Amino acid sequence: MAVAYPHFVVSETHTPVEQTKLMVPPAASPPCPAVTLTQDDLKKIAAYKAVEHVKSGMVVGLGTGSTAKHAVDRIAQLLQQGKLKDIVGIATSMKTYEQAVSLGIPLSDLDSHPTVDLAIDGADEVDPGLNLVKGRGGSLLREKMIESASKKFIVIVDESKLVNHIGGSKLAMPVEIIPFCWNHSLKRLVGLFADKGCLGELRKCSESGKIYVTDNGNYIIDLYFENDIGDLNEASDAILRLPGIVEHGMFIGLATSVIVAGVNGVTVKTKVGSELEVDSFSYNDLRNGF
Image 1 (cartoon, rainbow, N blue to C red):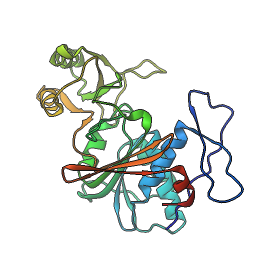
Image 2 (tube, rainbow, N blue to C red; image 1 turned 120 degrees about the vertical axis):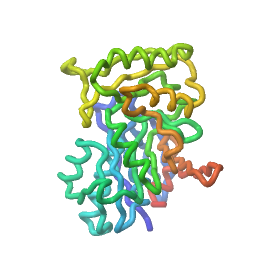
Image 3 (tube, rainbow, N blue to C red; image 1 turned 60 degrees about the horizontal axis):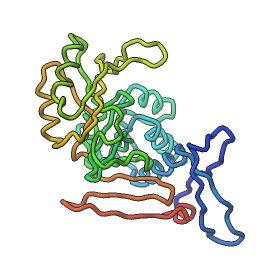
Image 4 (tube, rainbow, N blue to C red; image 1 turned 180 degrees about the vertical axis):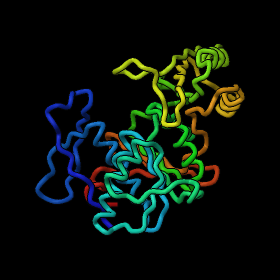
């Protein structure tokens, strides 16, 4: 069935850095003009492609963040159009909960639905093995709880999120901790990875300067790595062995598929046993539906 993708309009407010020019091949005469896709357009394309996997009657994990927001909007749109029915959403954050309620998506929780059919969420980093960094938006704990309970977990990103190794962006790898003696926890976390050039800081709200508090009433330590973190499972075990640590933002082996929207089209990477299948679609395919 052909899928109607949104028409992307270039705003004069987009900066050249945010824009990537792409010639879309014509589906028919007359020729199609050049289309300029912003980073947000790419996020929306990936989100729409992921929502094609949502079927009526599913329990769906609803992700958090700028990319996942498009997926939640799309699910609501299909419900309103009658193309989806009997969907139950489980929100990964209060922000997503409020968005879903405002759009009329029925919601529940893991207590009532311990097995989730499909989760769709974004990521801050994706490595070649489909391991992720998540949590720069602050919702890593609930995201991991829901996505680890999902039969399928589809990750949606634009190509800027691809890295050679976890921590490769040199941006934050979040760790959620209890507030008690947070500075002690910070020092112990940094000490674990001293040989990796690790630095850490307590997350604060950018506008108020107050300590950032998660939906669970916890704090977040953001770790930054100069060097490759190494074996991810060993790093995970070392972090979680520290008292006072709640969860970290490395999602190791959880993603079943990653949908990447880039300047030349959409790439879908899917785990099949121990192998990785890769499918690519041009933007001409997007114009005509998959």
